[in-house]
Length: 173
Image 1 (cartoon, rainbow, N blue to C red):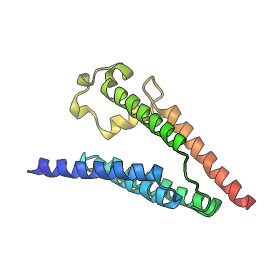
Image 2: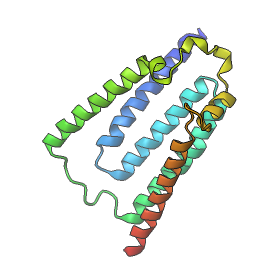
Image 3: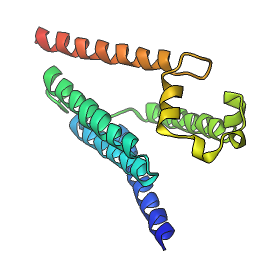
Image 4: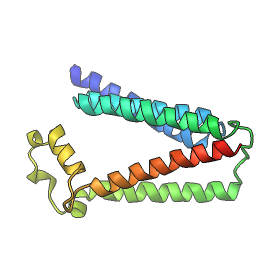
């Protein structure tokens, strides 16, 4: 009975993520878009908690939902009047956006279903109890072939540049 409840919760949360993700990129009000993004990040934290990754769920809430979205909202409010100059997107650009989104879904689906080909190892080689928070952290912050330290640092520099750019734009006005 517990697995049926988990399955129902998973599908409800997945539906919330899908709906709020679509609303994030389609709404014309930028503050509403940031709010929908906040809902997506909270729902992602719920999935982490459901998989018994309490630390990742807490980090998701504290860092992303708490920090990044608040930063977005402050940057939006500092730079201009939200939703004032929003224009309707042309229909040709909507079609191009839809085609690009479908292409991105196809590439992500291909990557998901052929994961072993991309990272050079079979998923069956990794025992289920070997994947811990410590293992994930070592992979994320390692500098070897499968490490993500360089992209992690590049994203932090990009976020810093965005903060500085927002402050510079706000000071000009």
